[in-house]
Length: 484
Ligand code: AMP
Ligand code: MG
Image (cartoon, rainbow, N blue to C red; front, side):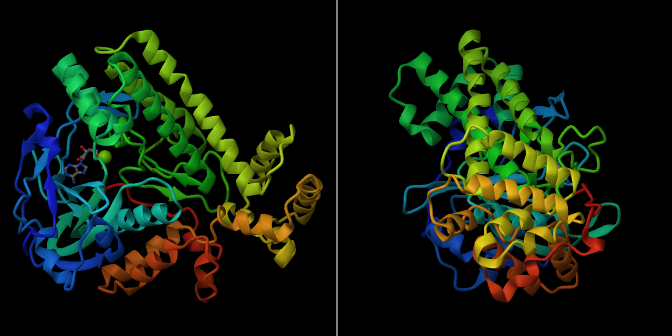
């Protein structure tokens, strides 16, 4: 392997030394390529003949010329409590490459061994959780939601101790940035105003270039407002597809507004507003319906970290844009899901009543919205069948049909547009579980097929109908282990 293909930069190393530690990966043994994302590689500007060539790199046994691995230092609030000891405990930033279209990509190898920030951890990632991260980052991308991406993953022979002995794996995660809210918390609470400013200017110059020319107070204010808005919009997008992140600690919040760090996440099956997917989250801090508020809390932590270099009033004003940005995006998403183009004062009430109904009757969230995207094509049976009490569905459908009278778009046109926002296929927990069980027996074909289906979640894909089915009884409320 040579690096001739890549235009390399490693701008993270421009930051002060305290922001990272140089660490070589601890190699894994006898790595096998599990899955390689050729489409993404093409976007990054390279093509691969033999996927196996990348296995040793995934195992941390080889580096390409120009790779200079570092563990990033950050801190953050975990479940509301500040933890100064964080940092990349099992992942390394290898380098940054510039794609032919000019896009910057961080390459981060997750599961590469211990670092100075590993605390009690072993620096490893297991096959199960690595597959879950791979699947979900690609599923999110398919849904059009900003996210880190999965370039490839390997499995290895090394045993890893969790509740039981598991198979080691590693993921080459790529993203336009791996900088988290927690990087700013580290800078502010341990390094001082200069460090915050250096970090902020770096983030602006790499990821918010349209702000570079603004004079300083406005540049910083505009930047923070944009981070707040991106965060609010991201969470409104999660709510619209029924995604629960599970661990919205501030060290898992991307500064560019990507979905970041997939742990015990879940997509809702039966709608339950208070659903908690993280079994260690005993208080339900990160329940589905609390995500919008938690996003704001995290922006607050970031705001505190900016106080050393920004006026308090400015920071407060920027925080104020969260609610507006969230509400606008949420309403926009829900109107699109309902196919409502015309404005009607009663629409917000319709949206909230729809959520209440779905919650009260535990209706499958994805199939409900896909069902109403086909009402005039396929009739109302697929929607009615989701309700134990059909009269509840009938009442709602009557109200909805009445509202549709105010629309001017033709039915088929509206329903076509609705099918572009209401996915037929989502990454249900049981689907992930099934392909993991196959992978643990050495069969990666089901995982690859599932990834292909989730690449185009809005397409009918009649040959893959079974992936859109309701979960079987065993597949509801799976207990996903958090020890990843
Ligand atoms: P997470 O819950 O995955 O967001 O991780 C929180 C922190 O723990 C991060 O600083 C991780 O790098 C670290 N961490 C998680 N798992 C391990 C592990 N197996 N070994 C070392 N550090 C870990
Ligand atoms: Mg994390």
